[in-house]
Image 1 (cartoon, helix red, strand yellow):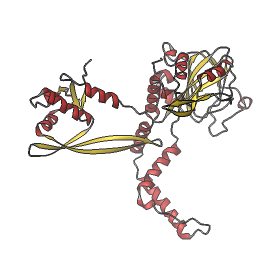
Image 2 (image 1 turned 180 degrees about the vertical axis):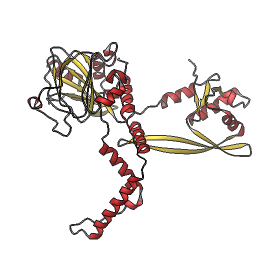
Image 3 (image 1 turned 135 degrees about the horizontal axis):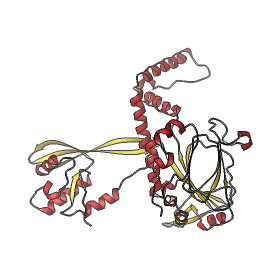
Image 4 (image 1 turned 180 degrees about the horizontal axis):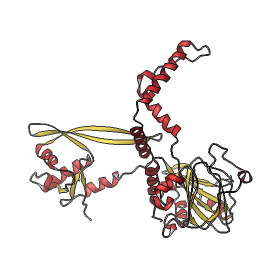
Amino acid sequence: MSTRAPIFDELVGDEQVFFREYFDRMPLLRRAAIQGDVREVLRAEDLDELLHRESLRLPYVSIFGRESSYQVSRLIHGKPVTDCVAPERVHEHFLSGATIQWYSMNHFFPNLRELTSMLARKFASRSEVIAFLSAAGAKESAGCHQDPVDLFIIQVEGTKNWKVWAPRKGEPTSHEPDELGEPLIDTDLAPGDVLYMPYGTPHLVSSKNAMSLHLSVAVKPRKWSELLIDIVGDIVNGDAAFRGFPHLDEQLSDEQADTLERLAGLLAERIALIDPKARLQQLARAGRDAAVPSNGHVFGDAAGIDRAQKTTGFKRGPAEVLFGDTDDGTCTLEIRKTTSASMDGKVEHSIRRTRIKVPEKIAAGLRHMTEGDILTAEDVFPVGDAERSLEVAKSLARMDILQPVRLPS
């Protein structure tokens, strides 16, 4: 399986030049931009293996211009799942000259997931990796069109001809090439080449006499209109002055019109009070939080805690611990854990609070642990029994107060 994720410099060259001269302005062609063997990013054999897992479902796979069914029903734990992809039918279409689209390949390949994470940090917005696998001489059905996203095209296998025109934002998504004039770019992409096209760039793709595999990495930076909608939404949803239900009928009263005028003026006042730089930084953080794929090793961490031994090192975990009063040899701890959940493209953060009572000796051990300390359980909790110390450390690790960092082989 392919394992390498392209870095940003391979996609754009000089980052400052890219954002100053090309981003949201004009296409950029970079020859042999991907260093080494570009097939380390994705191989045709990887798609064979993915197809035969028997877990691939619609709409992850689509076939250009083919309406016949390529799905099959499978039983999963005795229940029918009707939208599974039939490998043999997909292969039949490909061998008869089709182009296969593979959507959201970042959901299946860790290196492509890493690529979309990197782009999310750069653009503070979501991205997706779509693979296009074309048979020799395949007939493309998309025609000359433009997409409502920025695209990074990475040629992996074979070649394809690309005709690219200047961006035409706000125009129809489909075009007749003759009406666009001479293209800015008319070239064959070879393995390792990268082509950047801003939002709304008309392009026409045609296959050659050999199989082709390319990745279309889609990024959708947010428009100013979308950012302003977020800002206004936060203001009106968080201010009681904007609540209420007007009665909108055909006979609108002067009072309703006056209320709207007053609220519009109040909204303008609220907008004038924001700190533009701080608000943009907040929007960028929110965009990155929502766009970066979820990550975590909860199951692996649980197994690691159970495998801990007397020689295992522990450090302070991510949970915040507040030390309360000591009473009759016990201390009350308040444990605060921040959790995040992505809903409708936005990330909501919440704090979960838990209170526990522990012996003062254990509280004292935690108090004296500083960030960066890596100690064995017995060093932290010298309760006179190494096994007992280890069990205490494991219990605290399950609450994210501690983390094991040196596991036995």
